Structures are given as structure tokens and as C-alpha cells.
Length: 471
Image 1 (cartoon, rainbow, N blue to C red):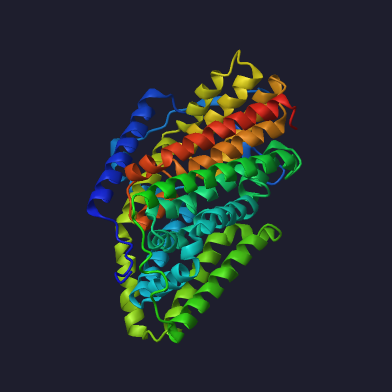
Image 2 (cartoon, helix red, strand yellow):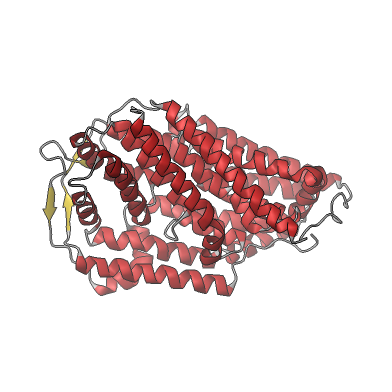
């Protein structure tokens, strides 16, 4: 573990990811010629949010419109997206990423990351499989109770490095951090951003129907732990272990203080995020809160360990520079939604998807609704935006087939949660892969089995919920 951890993305990984993203951009642009332009009529709800008007028509009132989307706007979309609706969130994510890169580089250059890993390996090497049980549970709980996803990203490089230090690989680090967050989101016990907003828009009791989501949580957690156990057992069987490093380190008082200070700041950030469950005013600022805690923790930790201001700034801005390729990828990926929004084809896509529901049985329909959410997640990664877009349409459609509204919410949070770690259009996933030092194709090669298992399980749980009359 003598080599310092770096967050720079390899040229090959960057090139492969960019090819995929640009191909998706082109496909989105082609859709603007295939689908008619138009939008559903929207009206303000009781809280002033714009929702689709379904008062006179179950499928919503759709108006075709002429939308001019010239080719030069397609070419400039990675830049123009910064001035579009939702640009504040995008800019926050980009700034968040730069802070992660700068702080992590400073911690690494000072040797704090290496020291943290050595301490952890010393304590847990002989019990390392315990981490495969505890860490997924922690991240699932954070996501399921407080809607944590993007906030976990600063910890990804540390967790991936820990996984490598324990004899596994970077993918294992993603497997017990980011993927459990998606599973926790899908369970949505008290998630105010997924379950809470979807139930509010659907007009049902917020956080009602908890028992079924608790069953979902247990099932998804069991699948994740089983997968990680089997995957790491395969790695260990190949003999890629580091037992000679376990315990081979000397305690350093200054570095110990620095790590402790950094840990306290991270803990404060987590507590503030969890408190957003009860303090609604904090919910829109969890990303900012955690970014500040991470920044303060990095500065304090490096200062206590003896790092000069000059060295810190040099390391920090070096880390910021290493994040620039990831910034480019995120801007290009975000432009896909911009292309479809500006050309007014997103509502048209939803309209055609909903038309396919005619004549379906309720059991098939609920699975189809799940599929619709998964498809729309590709274009609209934001959970709250997608809830206001889809729920006003899905609820009337479901009522025609006498499907309980909480069934629609369940299908929605399944699609919204699991798709967070499926598509290259999700900025948070791109950041996590960049910090883990891997490309999207390599990640999919690792994750497709677990994602397929989770998808199959959630489909089965939906059918079970329908069969038992879940409401």
C-alpha cells in the first residue's frame, strides 16, 4: 500500500465512456425526428408544483407543438445544458466532484488515506467478511431512510481502496457502497426524496404501506450479501490476498489525529443528512452539507497531520485538475435529457409508452409500469422530477384497472432506485466509476448479474404484492 491513491481516469476508460455517451446523444437526437413534438397540459397542485392535468382525461391532455431544435443546439448541448432547467443541481454536482477530487488528493499526498487503510486492514483483516455484511447494511439504511446516494460518492475511492487492501478489488468496493444505496432507494422505507415525493404526488398517505417495503429491504439485502460473498470467495480462491500486509504498520500520532478529525466531520455530515428526514428545510441541501463537511474534514485532517497551506493548495488543485475528464463526461451525459426536453419529445415518448397499456391484465400492467419508470430513468435521472412527470399519468391509468395506488408507488421506487446504478446518463454513477478507476463497460460486466437478480426479485415482489392485495 505504499503507492498513493489517485483519482485520475485512464485515457482508455475516458474514451470508451465517451463513445457510449456520444452514441446515446446521437440516438436522442434521432428521436427528435421520429417522435412528434408536444407536451402534456400541466396545472399547479396544492403545493404549487406543476403536474400533468388528468382531470378530464385519464391519459392526460397532450398538445402537439412545433419545437425548433436546430443541429447547432445539438452540437452545443453539453454547454447549453448548464443554462437549462435543473442546472443548479447539475452545477452543484460538478462542484461537488471538484471538491472530492481536491480533498482526496490532499489526503492521499499527506499519506492519510494510506494510513487509514493500514489501520482498517490491521483491525479487520482476520474478520474482513464481516464488512461484507455490515457495510451494505449501513449504506442501504442510509439510502432507504434519508435518500442518500450522491452523498456517498466521496467515500467511494476510500472504500474501493479498502476492498483492494483486504485482498479483493475495486468492484467489491462499489458492491458494498454504491449498489447497496440503489437497493436501499428501491426499498424506500422512509426515503423522503423517492417514496415521500411519489406518495405525495399520488395523493396517498406518506410512508404508508411500510410492511411491504420492509419485506423488500430484507430480500434485496440478502441478495446483495450473497452476491458479495460469492464474488469475493472467487477472488480469494485465486490467491490475490494481502495477508503479509495485515498488521504491518506503525502508529503515527499526527496522522491518527488527522484521520479522527476527518472522520468526525464525515460523521457530522451523515447525521445532518439523516436529520433531513425530520427537518424538511435540510432536504434540498444535503449535497451541499456533505460537500462542506468533506471539505472541512479534509482541511482539518491535513492541518492536524502537519501539512502546510502551500502543500495543501498544491495537492488540492492538482486533484481538481484530475477531475476535469469526469466533468466533460457528465456534461455530455446530461445533454441527453436537454436534447429531448428542448425538442419537446419526452412527453411524447411517455404518451406512446402509456398507449401500450390497453388490454393488459393488472399483473402485466404493474410490470409494464415498472418498465416505463426504468425507461424514463434513462432520460430523467432525477427522482423528484420523474415523480412529478410520471405519477399524475400512472395513477389514473392504474385506477382504470383497479390497481391500488401504493402498488404504483412501489413500482415507481423500484425503477427509480435500481436504475440509479444502471445507466451512463446518471451523473452520480459516472462520478463513482471515475473515482473507482473503472469504465462503464467494465462495471457492467461486474454488475449485470447482481442487477439482473435484483430486477428479477423486485418483479417477483411486485407480483406478490398484487396477489396479496397490497395497499
